[in-house]
Image (cartoon, rainbow, N blue to C red; front, side):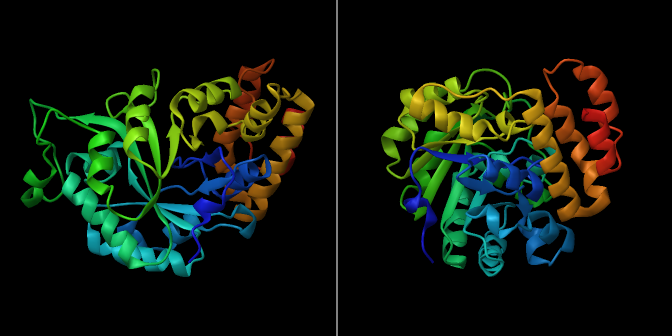
Length: 334
């Protein structure tokens, strides 16, 4: 299976995974406006291997989205091995292992960023995924996770409690990269914030630079990228191969093209309200075509982000979070 990562022009701009956000209509919008790589929402390896229909539907994609990377989470190597083959048969271009999600539900089950507290298990999961299929394997990690010295972490299987205890006060991205450096990982996306600081504050670019020193493969920086200027600053200061953009693209799928324009010409276009309205309608039409009427209910959270910062945003949001039809969308934004 060809490794698509090595064919991409740098800097690579990827749509990073966001639970409940990066569904197929939104991914298609980001692809239209310049995203080079698309990540799905993260999928449970337990659900994948047990044939869960809702999970399959959640990660379903259109050919226009390629290259599409499916992100998976869990804590059992044998299920990662099986999932690799399943995702290969589904036509994905790559597989990403979630070592970075701070969501309570994922962390409680022993997945996501909590896995960084057990570097040996991380290594097993990466190896099992690489051996399970032919797709290129990448990982998404965080800058660090600390041990709570006052309480033990709770996991569903109490017999495995010790396995998830952090042996030191803090595990960093550097520790994890050193542990898996010998495995055929194709790319790493590093969210440069700690588990304790999931979405706020300045990213730890010093950690990105340290990982860059020991990781010769493709490295993407993630976290806090809300403008083309910030994107250029991070690229210039860290020498990474690209960026993973998540919340910075929510309600602004055109940010990928803005970044590309800014890197090439030092300027970029700010969209007018008329242009934004056109993009909103495109997104709504894609949602209706891909997910039916209920998809428009799910679209409400996207619409609230599209109008953020516009004149009369509060009034618009109050109306948009009640839409039920495509006509509702068109009437309100007009």
